[in-house]
Length: 445
Image (cartoon, rainbow, N blue to C red; front, side, top):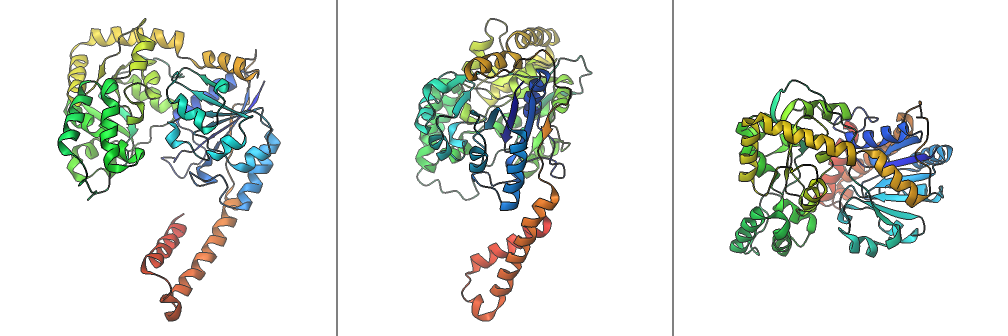
């Protein structure tokens, strides 16, 4: 039996409930517990800023120190390297950085170099971003690949939706963004080529966008076709779940109206939606580059709904001996595939049945635990389940409130000072605006 600390950063859809898990982390934790392990999870959202390696306050850090020491983990799984310097200091076990996104989204990268003897890297796609990971300080011999996995079960539920999509509306470039340096004809040509073959033509499209933004993450906003795909199929019976679809501009009003704000993020939520929909879409983030694929693909393949996915060279290769997953390169292709699936129930049945078989043989967590045991030399597969279940570490209100009270006092003093005539002249307008906004944020917390 192993004690496993899982660290991740996720902005909960239901902010009032800090101890709820999204599907993927719930699935991983539940399966580890079934194999007899102890699991403690921490959503770092409540203890530190996304990109910081320290806690919001010494009170929170002291509380975490006591709890982590008490738990005494044998293994730390940190998604996108969400961890604090103090957690590293008070533990001596292996640290597995697990890619939830690409290296561009990894945080606290200096910790990797500083503690390279303890760090392993778990990825899900052989050799994708390998050079970047080595540059970050990971020992090449400590980088290993797992398969995507799911705990979703197939259920023969009534089909309530023609097409469902559970996902996030990603941030777009701000209005008025300066495109004066963009070669518009080149952009149009690159987009046309990308829509013909995502995998072969991704690099040219990314380079074209990078020439304008100079920032990879901003370039993703130019490349992302999530909204375009959804606009192409909305009239076929689309139901949207997830986050931020209500933030779309009014030019995409129909998608805002099709958004069901009911939170859908637990294992059961996802299982119910996928099993009660004829078609379940997966629209990849640009970082997949036409090669990788999101976590949701295996979830959908484990259900009774058919997966229609953005093109993924890796998913195609993994599943080729079992099933030919319908994949699209362009919004128009997505529409045609959805129309065909909705008009041909036997086709849907054949694809879902073959997908289920693939998942049972290749897409369950126990296969990954066998690999992890070998690579980490830690016993994860035990004869008896842990009846206790997993625990979620939540910082109590009174601990968080100590920080909040101090912040209230500090900001109130700054506000008063900024309103004094002499001091007011020393505070620029923008600085005063930030103080007002900060006070408002604290009052609403």
